[in-house]
Length: 141
Image 1 (spheres, rainbow, N blue to C red):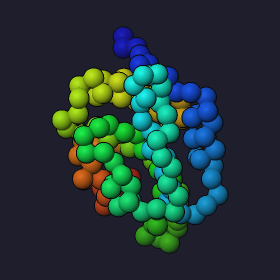
Image 2: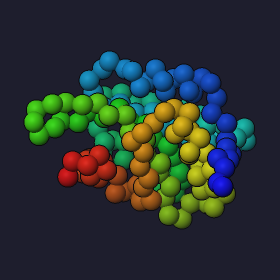
Image 3: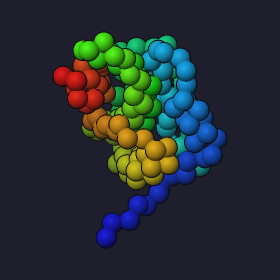
Image 4: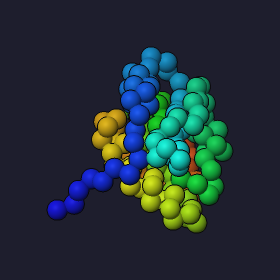
């Protein structure tokens, strides 16, 4: 039977910030980028983005280091409805240092469960992360 092993701690202030982010009222794309702080083995907020585009977020993802990205997305449906899914993207680029990959991969499940995220996606090449990719992941295309 597999067990959930938590490699890195998710500090309460990060949990609180992300729960508040989940219920934001703004109707634009926003995101929070998280990273692992190696010396403390804690997941911390690296940067916050408000009123941004997916292309801007893609440009911020490191090409050689893993990151977690929580996105409040604006999705326009074909029938005219608009929804605001909360998406979690785990970027783990090919060629990352194995120790980093293990720290991030070992903490991702705990982070997802702690935050109650349901729309979770992995990407190995940050250059592929764009609006079309996200819509495919959300099942629109």
